[in-house]
Image (cartoon, rainbow over all chains, first blue to last red):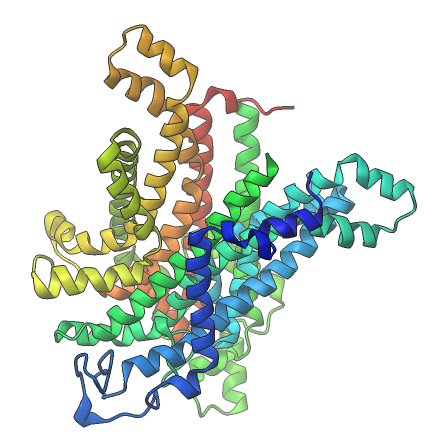
Length: 287
Length: 311
């Protein structure tokens, strides 16, 4: 079994091995990096105010002034997509962070404590599987109102079982290895066995699982926005742009919906590719 | 086998019971009381009090939960405070649209996914094209698929209507084709990829070589030896597919303006119509749990190795 250092080496190869880096990881990672930069730098790089309506410039096609055209109220679509990147990425990032933190703690605690606690956690996770994420998010919106907070909290809970289930089996496999018993007999505290040995050894799996969850969380949160239950207008999010653009499709101006939709698809593909490749590397390591 | 069935059934009922408790409890804890919704903005506190009394809102939580559950078990899903009608009545006209859409999509996923997966695994050139198509299809959310389909097939080509529901079976079929494709797309790609992987794995097994060397027709090798075994992993994950279809249904109904459970849920959430949210959420969760249970038991029939629990 590889040590934490080797696992780290596997995921983040040092400079001399960087030549062998998978081009797919590089491309997907670069795309995601650029998106994050664009989201952070939105105020400086967006050519227009994303919410400034100019009726005279309504429904324009692609031009030098408006690279991606304008919407029915003349707002610049490129600027709205750039600003929309902020909440469209922040939401899933929060969901994945919370779900991963919760899931990891539950998984390692289940593997370590075992017994009744383990069974209780499994039952609760099974129960949560019965609630599709979007349905849970809608219940949360009905309770606490539209916006970012309610769907993000609900989806964090909905994604926790997916992390917990995978990590728990890995952590309990790790826990049954002789070195863990040796540490325990040697007087190493439970907390430090969990944090220094179990956690680092399931870390590659954790990274893979949360990368794959990111794409799915992005889509589900975009669906909440699409239904009009997320962040409220005029603030732009990609999911909401797909839905506001839908009325223009019938009038023959599909730009807003299509551009936001394509951006969502490409971003999800990038995260899925990255997750798949990380998973591939991990299984190589297991051999 | 009987023991497994009984265990599953008990588990299923328990899940539904706790699920219903959570759904009811969530609406109970929600800030803003139904009494205020019923009374509108300008009610006096005594008016509110009398409404609370009428609606039994002063009863303890467990009494109200029990009343609700008792009603649900007798087919009474409560009363919508927004429409001032029984929720069961409001849903009755809408359920069939949703069932039609989901079943249509499920049929597309099963047939399309297995056929594409088989082709991807067995045909070399075509396989590459199909595999690439499936990788993209997997990442297309239903609402993006919906707007692309509307834009191309409803607005440009005018082959299908962009919204509303049709009359009669064929009218319904015509109206539901685009929504069903939008709903099915990513799950079709998912099933296709799984089928491809499972078929590849089966093809590499010794028993396939044996069957070939015995001179069994390639077609029979594929259908009787490869596909039968390959179907097991596919049906195992169909639980995730069902969850996806139920969540996706909400989005697709909204995208195409279909008057079904999903679009009703969106309206109910917008209007804070708690009784309706509870009812639809309960129906969706029940559908998911029950279908998953059926899939699980079905798997055991398909694969005799799963029939008895491994001790």
